[in-house]
Image (cartoon, rainbow, N blue to C red):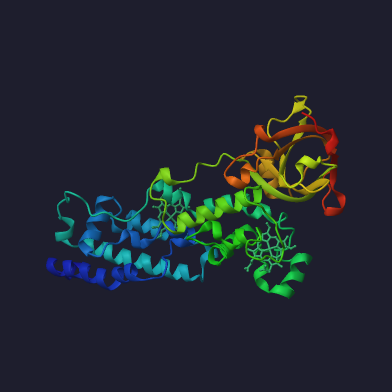
Length: 404
Ligand code: HEC
Ligand code: HEC
């Protein structure tokens, strides 16, 4: 561009022309913008564009997103360009789109800055409103944040799904031969690849999250090759339902203000394991009821049981016993959480306490958000845990010893 040779009126025209040729097509494009690589659908470059060039200019200027003295320092350009040099993104369609969005805005802002009429446009009484979301909502829907909640809610379930859906396990290899690649949705590449797959799949129903196949299959509400693997209100159901609801709200743009977001999760991080736990000789009164066990570790230093459970599990109790894999729990940011995130999560052999809870009133079934707690407590027992992995090496406790 030869700004020095352009008399003022033409410079104005040129900003309008750049807008029409390069910015408007981005606004009209049905394709998701490059922002969705890291932000899911809550953030889109289209939210920073209005149908009119003038309105777009005024809105961005009033929000401090463009710098007319140093156009290349404009904040909107920094937002667009984040992660542009990430080698992982090279070659992605979103990287090409990002480049195109960046160049379009860079050229347009430069043209605006060279236009005295735009530069001098008086502050409007009411700046044209952009469709952007509050920062809290933007932050919540960042993919890195979503991944954290995915790891604790869904990724930790794969042993609960008995590896039937874990790519690369013998169980899954067999099922893939019978049912095709769709059963291998817990990806070998890890939680991020799995989340990306599920987000792009038809397994989440954005209009009715509670009808997502991710839930209705393991409930066997829709005929499931694996049979009943969760019941309404159990830990698996709660985790999948909460995640599906959150994804639907994000993707459908239902969060418009900070107060709409789910309560900030103070809950412990969860880690799935293949360590099985069994209660033998359970009383007849427990049959068919949801039974939750919380396991506490012994703290030799303070000579007491730890305050928070180190493992948990739940499942409907059988005729004369209950058994399931345990999920390990650790406070977010704790040494334990860091250790388990790095390596293979496991419990050391030693002295433990089990607390048992029986949902006799079917409270969880009536309200999936209900918490099983003191009201359902049926007793506790001390035991030695070996916590070896595998169905054949369960840690077993006689339910007769569980006392209040
Ligand atoms: C490579 C990943 C990536 C891409 C692509 C990306 N962002 Fe971001 N964005 C982030 C991260 C990470 C943060 C948080 C930065 C921080 O806290 O310092 C963020 C923060 C933001 C914020 C500020 C919210 C806050 O936390 O204060 C806005 C607004 C935003 N991005 C908009 C966009 C827009 C618009 C696009 C597309 C044009 C985009 N982003 C593309 C990763 C990305
Ligand atoms: C014993 C093996 C087994 C277990 C355990 C199992 N499943 Fe399945 N699942 C299957 C088989 C086989 C299919 C394919 C047939 C079908 O669609 O029902 C399937 C299909 C699915 C599908 C549909 C996939 C698609 O893209 O069509 C979903 C979703 C699903 N299961 C979720 C789960 C969840 C969640 C769990 C654990 C809480 C689980 N399953 C536990 C065997 C199992």
